Amino acid sequence: MDNFHADTNNSCITSGKIDVSPSTNEKKRIRKLYNGVGGAMLAQYFLMYIIVLVCYILFSGSITEEYNEGTGAAVVGFTEAAIMFCSPAAASIIMFFVYNGICHADIKSFLSTDKVNGMYILGAVLVAFFFHQIGMILEYGLAIVLTVVGYDTPELNIELMNDLPTTVIDIFSSVILAPIGEELFFRGVVLRQTSRVSQRFGIFFSAFIFGIMHGNPYQFILASLLGLVLGYIAVDSNSLIPPIICHMAVNLMASVSDIAAYFDEALYEPVFYICSLIELVVGIVGFIYIKRNVGIKLPSYTEYHKKRTMPIMITSALVVIMVVIYSYDLITSIEPIDVTNADYTEAMKYLICNLH
Image (cartoon, rainbow, N blue to C red; front, side):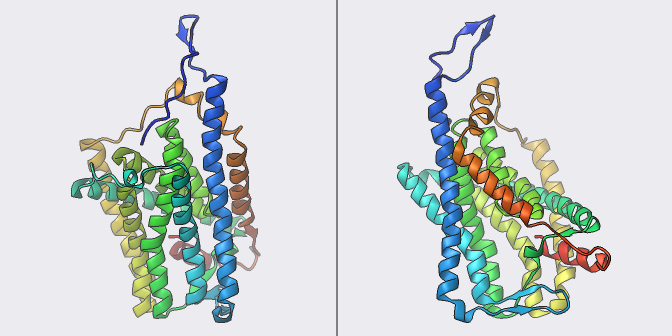
């Protein structure tokens, strides 16, 4: 990913140190770049809701409204699942091509195969497994804390109908469509553009945005951690192919229990725990091996980069607006529950098996 070459002609030596502060013109160029990213995020956000609204209007007759009397969770059928799961990815894919079309970017440059080989992909997948499971553990900890103090995220309380069409769209969106769409937009637009100023900042910023855009505290933690890994892999490989494959692998492992449940619902929990354990063990082994034998080193982040990232980012109106919108969605997803009548065992079991 190309670095953004800022204008340093106005740098001067003062008190024995090089002044690396950006010039006024350079600040304007960088702010324009950040606002472009913020504009793309804003467009993707509203495009997603437009797609959802249009689909609900067109297919309202085939949407069912059912609830599980035992858990109180909404039961989602094929049509609603297709709209809910596919709309975000569709909006992301559209905005990837629109934004890069406006920027006259060479789409082929996003799919470099210079470092794409079997061993590289295997190592990247194992590291992604490790961070995915760390994120899951942190999710559980947060779920315990929120449940104990009397809060919950009702929007996550959904169940899918256990029929073939719904299961197929669930697996397809999770394993194929979402990884492609999310990587194209959050790594192919957000990361790639912010990396022109600083690759390390781009990795962390795109991971934060990837996490917070999920709109609830649990997935914020999980997606942010996973986003760090996927961002690092994208920068290291100079390609979106490895992060897409890693994202697919992580989501596939999380979906095995859904596939098992289609054949026998009693298999869901044991298969989920077995897959989580396997992912954690191979992830730990893989991460240790990669760390010792290959090395994991973040791109540099010097004083030069520091003066061109956060100080200018927080004055970029469209980025600030999107962070506020995402933050509002996340905060309002948390609601109080009746702790006096709460069944903590069942609540935690439900959360643990639905936060992947």
